[in-house]
Length: 364
Image (cartoon, rainbow, N blue to C red; front, side, top):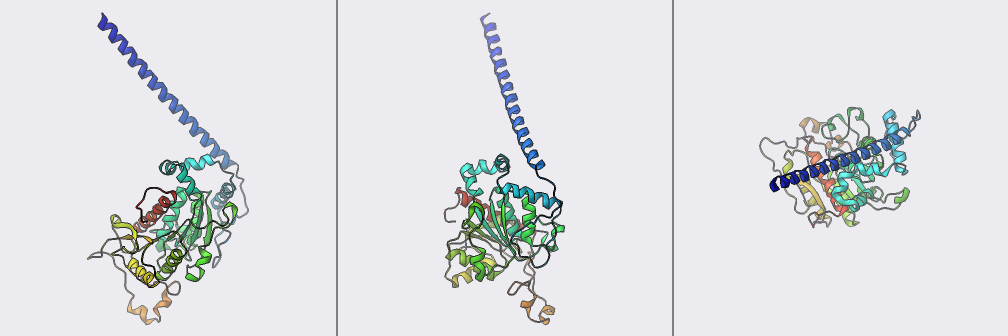
């Protein structure tokens, strides 16, 4: 009899516990559903509050283009209107935090705040730089200066982060701004359609001007340039002026993403661009102290190599005249479309962790 009573009592406790667990689950589901509904309603109200406009909205304020820029389409106009509102602060911050929630949970509230207040410059907006810039914007960086003299080409679509066929022929910096504004409208962009050279370094790497960030110096610079002269000028200027920088070395002819490393420029190996950059910097008195993204993959039989210039091209005259700009490389560099993205994302990852103070190898 006692055993029966004990068994009945035990079953009752199990049933109560099960009922409590189910009730708690229902309550949690209800709360989460309510929160999602509220977020959806706020986002819907924000979108509905943006009026339709037939007046073309300028997509940039300081882009000096060589030739006519494309007229913004309806989607561009809508995205720009949303961006103008977001950058005035007329955008529900909870929506931004929800979009950045995974970064916030990883970096912590304080870390994400640092990232949202950061100013980063990306020099070179091709296969490497475009992926770096996209990752920074998606991760919360609120001020991005994009520097590149070049336009989107058909051959660059195999590795560019956001370019489409419709973007072919427009400046790479404008292409990035148009696409990323649709993803992160609160990000402020400063576009510079210009080749980086030592003589314009003070201008292109100057403090951010405008709004509440007037005079903010760059928190970081990402070097994604593929021209040796410009790369050396940039790294030398950053080194001499104590501007944090990370440089991407050569992704061309590489095919093994597991060989990509971050290390000091004085230690990088098996990379032609890194070797040439290091040699030039040493002549200028810079032997170390600059982190670089490079690959330890070794050349070998069956692997891609830099294509030589044909004798026919030599017969046409000065080889230097064949480049897009004076002193720019003219030989074709075989590039597997996936590798530049790894280099760009690795550089962006480095910047994010350094700005937010997350654990990372101490020397970098």
